[in-house]
Length: 227
Image 1 (cartoon, one colour):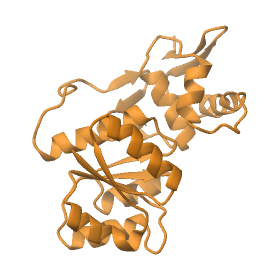
Image 2 (cartoon, one colour; image 1 turned 120 degrees about the vertical axis):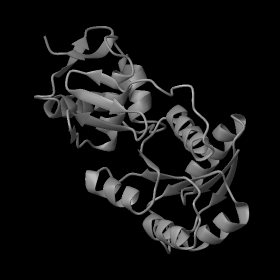
Image 3 (cartoon, one colour; image 1 turned 45 degrees about the vertical axis):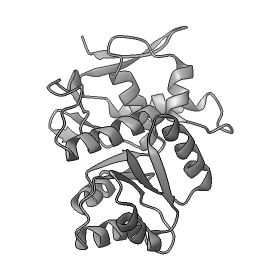
Image 4 (tube, helix red, strand yellow; image 1 turned 90 degrees about the vertical axis):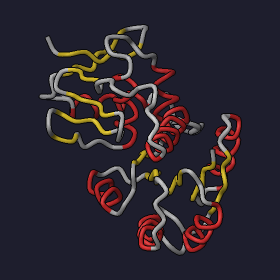
């Protein structure tokens, strides 16, 4: 499987090349938006992982140019822009999925493989499963979004990473250590207590959703429906 990674951060390039390479994904790297479409045509990848913030030509411009030239490769947007509006603009521009930064590497791999399967018409192991629901919250695995009933829940990338981690373990406590790894991956200068700030902000946004974020002393945090 061949992946074109359009990302200008050298440390991110190296990390993803090494990690995904060990998982049998051939990662080709491009760090410049102006060169991305030419490499896209030359490499003919199975999937393109495209950062929105690029030098010379941003990710949306790269995507628009590629689609205008008839390149139909599935595109996964990688973005630190956490607003709903940014995501909608990207999807409307022709992206197939998006993943907000910071992201979990396992989730990145799963989304890349899902896009490839979808483009080749192959059903994945999760085909037919219902999205996870807790209270009024609904997690849609296909696009990684979380809804409060019919409304998209507007969250920062860190809040989204935290809530998804909890929703994947319904009724079970997730340790602070594990949540810290998922919400602040590779960020060695961030204080451990920072996870509590994200929890506090997320709790406020969960008001009225029918879901409760509970602190389990000595165990971590748990998400469950309101009684």
